[in-house]
Image (cartoon, rainbow, N blue to C red; front, top):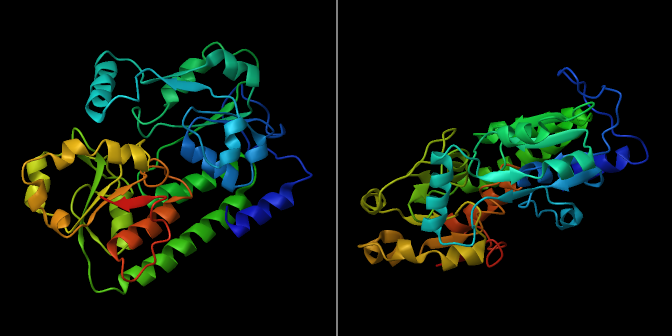
Length: 337
């Protein structure tokens, strides 16, 4: 948590956390204190905690794991697929569920009602990556009495992420905390980017977001690559991550390949890499010959649109400019293949 956010949080201790005014009929009155928040997305959990609301959280998703203190919270979601299976099989399971018109996740509606939150934080950016707004609306279904306010986020760029932090702060009744936190985060981004952009070398970068089948990163990742002093080869800022064929990656012959699968930690990324390294011509790629294929913890960093995108930028600068930036995150967030 940033110094400003910690200060804002400490200033709020000892007095109730007031909710933002509701604009939906049947919801709790604006005077109700925000003492009960459910977050169904890892990034919104991190945002709420960075804003000083960790003590107000009463429930989380099965993927919310940072900061470590949220492990105490009841888990309200689970996947309908076996996430322990290899990348290819996970992809098949997801596509089968979507083809049949089914959600990829389920929400424990009964437990949600028992927790009686004032605010629920969720997303409608990707139905595959996490519980969606429609999942939450279905769970609320026949909710009796005053309904919680639901804030759904849909970030596609870095600017969206900073605006979403402000939206969360406003819904929780403390817009000033959002302002302090976003200023701190954007200042840190600018400081790192200014250092990186002074370096003459601008390596050509491919960011792999799923290994088999092959997907490259879109949304905010092209911005992060550019800010880190690289040239992004695939994916466009503000658009969903696209699938590509192996031959496209082979033809591009990147200087650097950063592997950051959605939902995979560093160990899982290494265990799943074989379908990529077994492709014809892999050993002839420039990045492979120069030992510039980097495995990362995409789950904790690059794929979470929250405060730790700042650390994600720092990791990218270490990867792209090893002679200029000390490897502070090596072996915890990234490793060379």
